[in-house]
Image 1 (tube, rainbow, N blue to C red):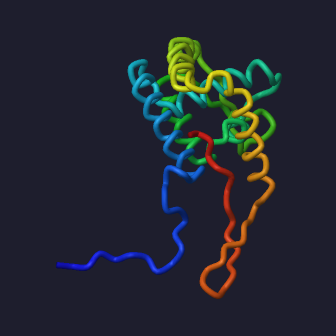
Image 2 (image 1 turned 180 degrees about the horizontal axis):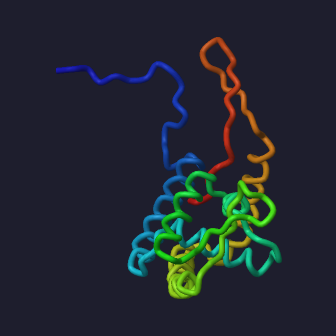
Length: 181
């Protein structure tokens, strides 16, 4: 019988349930899973919903053409994923992409009537899941959101972090957390 290996070095955490990052990861995964279960019934993925919602909110705030790059930045999604999701939304006729009038390398994105109808159908689903999920901390959601924003802002400012690897020190760029979670 093989002997179980045990680490002879310090672990990141002994009890995962006492590590903030682990708990955040678990909570985010659970929230995404619940959101997916319900949004699937409406015929939209979570990322599609977030991009459509961000695009629609942009339309309320900005009086200029919205590019894929602007949408990716505002939503916090990576540019490549945004491009793929927008392409799928375009195939389903929920958005249209047109060349930018001034920058020929950019595409502007417009939400279509059917895209707005889908968003209108999906929004109450999203809001209900969100409300039910965060019900245990409903009185503290605003203060918790402020904490998350603070973490995100700080992470965006700190482009690099130093990680000690054995005897050497190595600089590893750390991107901000993808709060698609």
